Image (cartoon, rainbow, N blue to C red; front, side, top):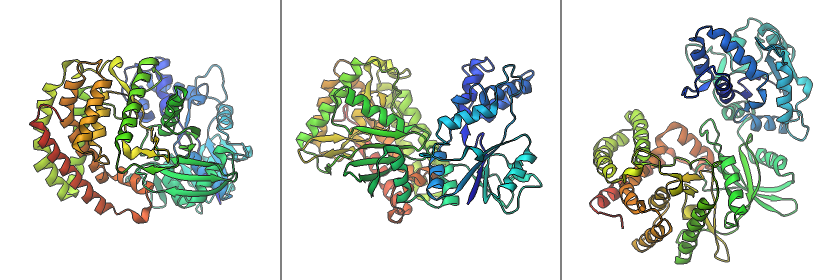
Length: 546
């Protein structure tokens, strides 16, 4: 097939660079809280001489600051699948030679080609696109004529005006890189707002051979065998065996149009940091590709920990102790807060309110969910929110906990993310949520996580150990006691994520499709949420959670 693709805002994304350049040039205030290129454009156009300012900004972003552009999520995977299937890629862009109001006369086309060079578009060992297959047009009409001459089977563009040109070839299938809008979309245009779905439509679903192709390019070794590992709730995980017998774990993280967090980068950097500081009971990082959204790690042989022993517990406690010691001995300014960090009472209450409001907007479609929210969760939430906010130490009720009292945390931490090796050493895995957090959250989540089923003896042992590790903070214990019911209700909300369309899509994508029953899963998760509420009721009458 001949597949044509637009460049700006279809392959290359500029939301971040538009914002940063506009701030650097004083076009907007650094406190501006808008999002995306469209909102910024509208903001500038409302200003005096705004249209000129916007055109000047475009020239800067597409020219001098082109190196700041990002490849949009999923593009790299799509291009490598095209290469594996021997399809021809043509990039056809309506891009003038020079930007407006640019006294330096920087060539926008040459800057775009430099960006593609850096991103390995023309590398025969990577995307392998012929440089002559990148075509720039002076007008939209010229662009459409090029598409016709190339006899493109598909063309993908973010602007509907391209498809509305009278000479657009009738035999070329049209994909508009945008969300569906019934007011602007013609019947012969397919609107898709993410590259993962575009890939499915144009090239078919991702199969093991695609993953092998990606892995070969990433680790530079021939893959002999690949095996998908079941059980990953979010990422796709594969066991890879190379021709020379080496074993690796490959993680394909959730599509960033669903989950925007740079999880491949976070996890790779986290485990490298830990190994650098002699915390070695985590996998070694081998390689990552943020554009492909995959990471490769050493394969950890062993078994899941379904029935933790006292020794497992001791190793886990020691691991937390080492993490906290590391927290005290590094600068850490280049490490972000952990995913959904809760550094104050305000944070956790805000997270629960946000999750509740989202579920309420869709609950009319699910009668059982609606009944649970109205009759069980909300009355309990009103009581717990006010009482435990007032119990929370004042230092971090509204303001973030000081950095010196925070700890580095895997965030999603527990025996569900650990492997016991044959020598009984426990290896901790999954660090794609890693970052700074309140140790209270690490402590509470370990106990509340649905995969953790601890008896009272182990629960008490965990609390005692955490109180010892974080004893330098006199507010840790009262903060923990105030937080425990709130974290229980937070988990009641989290387990209902299965009702959210995007989350359900991600979960189904990560699992074997034929083994995933969404209706049964939602029923099961609703039972969990009810159980959490019962447990919160049971502890709210106690002074502590032990």
